[in-house]
Image 1: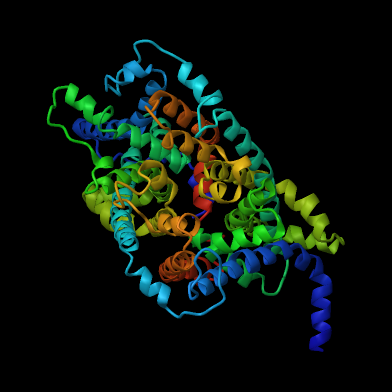
Image 2: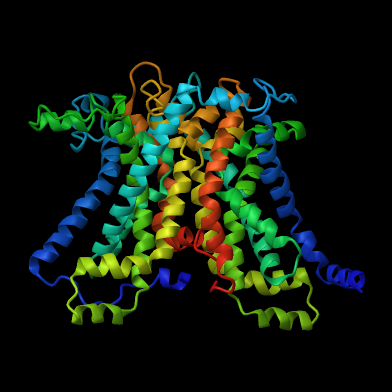
Length: 299
Length: 299
């Protein structure tokens, strides 16, 4: 299975069921399933545009009688987490601050590891890589406590560098795998020719390998942006009170409110939190699938 | 001779060794070191702070007498079995139906896969709202005339796991669909023609010919889904926070609660070691055959 096939268009295949009723059945099933997958999004959207009076009628599928954007404004700028009423925008900017360095660093390291692993002979590297891959399958709970202690020792627990380092650590297995697989499919003659010309490790990396890495870097960016933006657990533990990412703040806003729950604000906040990964998904199309598959397809 | 060859090897590849230092440091300290320390702590009497003593398997004995842990293990098995089987069958059906030369294929694919881009927190909060017994789907259906309609999964401790399975299936079925569809697209046209000429019924073609050919894609999707269940924490925290009571506790949450809220490090690390060993037993053979089994397999 190569990744090229993953993005192949529909093959012109002899249709299995030519009967009219067969076709109707196929479309009925697909439409029903599309409804199942899309309805939650629809419900979230209409709920976020309703007033609380309308929500109390208990008709989640009804369109809003009177569209209000108030819940969105509240969710963004004045929703409360406990006593702190600064809205989700705080979490949004925290997430951005975490996201940018984490994505850049984890991809750079992944590319470097992949390059060193596939073109250079380093003893013990494969053992190291195997350990790294195994680590990718382990639940975070195994690593978290010792990491917390270690971070506290070197003074980065509950800080921006702390959470960025954590994302670099836990992003490394997939990023390394991604780039290693991509590089090992490149022709090795290219590399040998450059070596004969006297190019060194960094020269080959920067002037030959990196310029050829654009497609796989796009895949890596899609994967890391989605994964880091959607992270909850690591942000909760390592980011510290000042840098809590959007997902954590969203959960705090929705699940720790006292008094009557403002469902419209909650749903607006939920949509806001999912906008970045949704935009990435819609913009990336088939690249997204490529990313999912290359994370686990054998190298 | 041996020594001079070693010297030459290191001199030629020295930079590559240096480039892999960050990865080596992360594997040794952040993965292996933390794992070893977690296991070590599980044999100590640590509560709020780590201790150096050795109490044998006491923590494990206590762990398996803790009803909360036993509940979370049972829940884990229940969720894993239903989530994996439903996700797999549904994803498979979606892929097969989409592969029948349907129109607007891209739209269907987008609709089925977008939940996978959303975070578990968002997924959990969204379904918590839809399944809200007072104002959600239950009320809407009753108002439509189905007065006996009951859908109070999230607030009933007997059925809360159905709600969690529902949300996880919604989130993950698209992944199976995408991977299986990619596999179907890689199958040779001639095979379809041959089975049509031979007049083999479609369900037999899929069941006995296509399914075995999709083995790599099936393994990949099952591995990815399994990892997500083992790591499942955010969804439960957002959707039910383990409740009602302890009805939807899961192992990952049990460990986090004992680490950070209940200050019982010994018990938490014992639980995480149990998870570690379980994952190792399940994943090691798969990983071995996937990555190191067939030497020289295509990249």
